[in-house]
Length: 381
Image 1 (tube, rainbow, N blue to C red):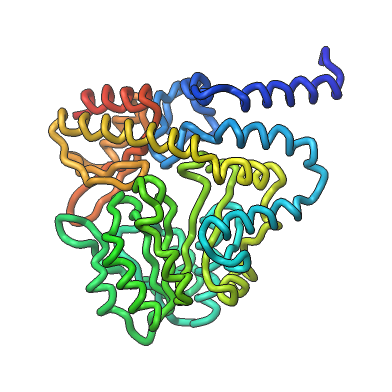
Image 2 (cartoon, rainbow, N blue to C red):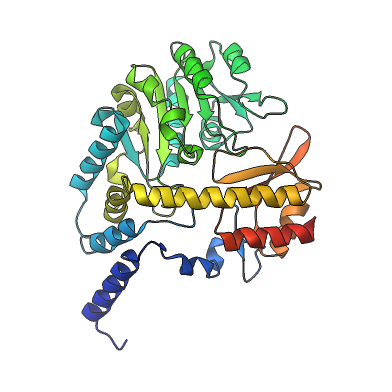
């Protein structure tokens, strides 16, 4: 190398700070670069035009987070104890709960898995009650560790959680009730008053876990969250993540809100600030209250969502109204055939089959990526 190690580190750090300090354009030009081949499915073309299969946010991390990462890298030799405590207090203040009611983790997925382990251990032979389809990380982990999965089909036509039927299904075997709101893969958001009333009644019988990974994309997180149920002392857990609106999916940052004793028990199986790196904690501290970036990120997502709605209508497709950074719509061919043909045209998407119908889920990307989806859809349709 023509640079010695000290010069190389210094130049890399300054470059990182330069990117982090970029103005309101939020560093969009790099987004058009081809995805890393290692990050793509084996069938991906050499030049993927749009990766719209993982519900990632292409506009993050924010400039403040990038700057914090650059600065934190120099302290990578230190354990970040104080930053975990600081972030825990910051989140607790924002959520209106005590610090001991916040459990940090490397992504909310680790908390879902730890919760599954706790209830599998606590109630051998018990079951997890959830909608179907829904996000499956918690329920799959529960099944893997010996629990049964009690699936309640979504409501006909609207594909919402059938809370009335779910409440009827609760029995002596039910160990945990899992809800994803807004739901993945449908994108449907539950009525907040109906949901809170359900949680109020059911949590008096069984613990309730609500996964709010996409809550920011509803446009009004405080309206739709069930954090208020926790404040009232109910047996409720809420998981949130930095992977969506904050654009930190690869940095792995999430947290759970709940009653202190429950969080302490779940933490035996996973989670805790010790699982987080110096760079991740510092990035989270920098961006958690970055309202400018949150609104920018949300605005870009809503712009892409409206473009996608219009594109689907123009091509004769219906869709489910979404409160997330993705949209689900019914397709007119086999799901594997559809996703394969889209991939041939440089666009990766996901497919599901339920209610006797194949469905495609499209994540929201940059406008260039959404236009690539629109072009591919015309060819595939």
